[in-house]
Image (cartoon, rainbow, N blue to C red; front, top):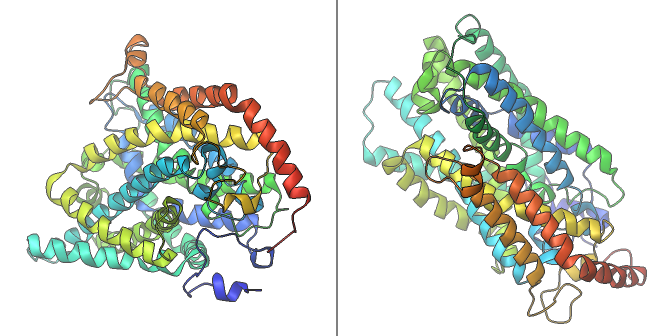
Amino acid sequence: MTTTVETDQAFRVETRGIDYVPLAERWSRPRDLAGLWAGSSVQFEYLVYGAVLMTFPGFTFKQAVEVILIGNLSYTLLGLCSLQAPGAGTTTFTINRAPFGPNGSRVIALLNWLTQVGFETEGLILVVLAAVALVTKAGLGVGTPIKVIFIVLAAAVQMVLPFLGHATVIKVLRALIIPFAILYVILAILTLGKTHLAHTGAGATWSVWMAGLAFAIVLSGLGWVENGNDFSRYLPPDANRRAIVGWVFVGGYIPEVLIMLLGAAVATYVPSAGDNPIGAFPHAFAGWFLVPFLVVAMAQIFSINSLDLYSSGVTLQALGLRVQRWKAVVIDTVICCGLTAYAVFSASFNTLLTDFADCVIAWIAPWMAVFLVDWALRRYRYHPAELQRTDPGGLYWRQGGVNWRALVAWACGAAASVLAISQTFWEGPIARASDGADFSVFAGIIVGGVVYFVLAGPLVRREAGEQDRLLAGATPDR
């Protein structure tokens, strides 16, 4: 049997893609997930998200605190969406074949791949802007050729961790927690005494408050739910589920809340921090801190982007691209280069970020609902070998490889989410009827989950019985 050393060892290329992880290679523990998600949360992007919240019309610091504390509770959803892989032994969008069918799942996998590439591009934009700021600080001019060089170099560096794979990503993110935390403690000390917490706006209306909440939810735990099982598949099948959810929540919630609060506090005395994060944040602290701050911020963004790039690679495999996992990472890197160049030269960062967050809400909230309801209807288990099948006759095949009930439920949830969005570029009729409040997240989850339960409940329960019969006759490992 293949050993863990050959497939998933830190600082060696992980050779396993979306195929089943044998029991002998399940080296991970629930608390490893805390280090992973904490390492991804103690970083510059969440500082920016906190500052962006303060750009919502009328937002006060108190309202930002409320939104940040409540919105980040969605890390519970990430914990729930990390529970399937220990039993299934594979990645999210291989497991997704159970509710949607092997071919139907490709539709959702494509949306996930686009989402991951979007987040990767967002991170690269910030890295390039930081590099430009450093060169400008040194008194050098930065023209188009230099920016292009920065984009290519940043993409190449970003590729290193996901290219090596799962064990490397976990080890590096866990090791970076303490140095990153020290940076933000220093920034918090420098921020004390400068903040204007009592007078930062007239006070947002409840409809704007709801828009801020949707923004916080999707850019915290909900925005990671499609990644969860990609990083929990090396846990053993008997791993404690409460421990998994608990460690994911603690690792993500606490650091992200603290960093977002710090970003919102900085924005009370540097109002442009949410619109031009790299250019504005240096005004938040003494000049001597600028260079170390920007250097560490770049390292942080590289580390968090490694999660997106890793997941986008295995998602490409789930889409049917017959390449090795590390080659899929290279393909995504090239695509991100092009998108980053477009964004750096022709787009507003703040507009790009908020519009992108809205697009993510529309598909991911109803998908998560269908995914979790299906898992519950199957009595919280799958048949690992059947998940790997993409041919007619498999347990999860249905009609032409598509479970139309799942796609209809997801489409209904996505439509409800779009109808309930309230943003500058679009206000749905549900939002208009509620005085402009944004209920997109909740509408997508409720409608998607309920419609799937009604349409697919009897079918999935029958499949669960067949699934159990197959499992009873299956060998415990391959």
